[in-house]
Image 1 (cartoon, rainbow, N blue to C red):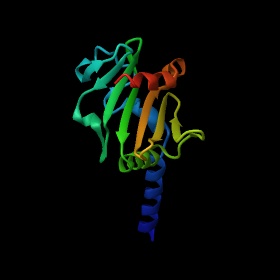
Image 2 (image 1 turned 90 degrees about the vertical axis):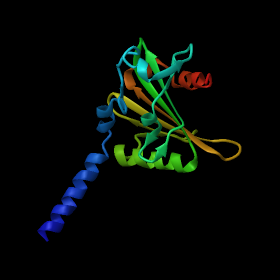
Image 3 (image 1 turned 30 degrees about the vertical axis):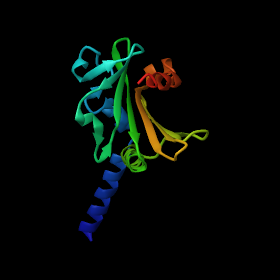
Length: 167
């Protein structure tokens, strides 16, 4: 009885710890790409940049989250410091799996936009925006923007999405 009670308490504590929006702030970026890092410090991870400041990230470790395949990873900078990371993924399985992974990690989304298939998690310092797109052929893709909240307020999200079309 004591052993099963202990296991139940441990399971509940692990679940509540793993589903915490504060963890988004602790990550402060994506993998080892941390907000506030200078472009110069990240130059070995950059393949190329557009004139509008969108940089393609190189390295296989950025192209996978657990068993989810990420098509492309971009970084943007504000005042030469990393302020957002953009993940592009395709396919229903990838989109569903990453969405479930984020829900398991950060808990229930803190907001939804009804006019789009878009949800987001907003912590104190970091925002994660997950937008799902279904094209005319019913192909599913998603754009994930992980951004430093204070810098994102200054730069319009629509501007980010428009600049992505340059690729």
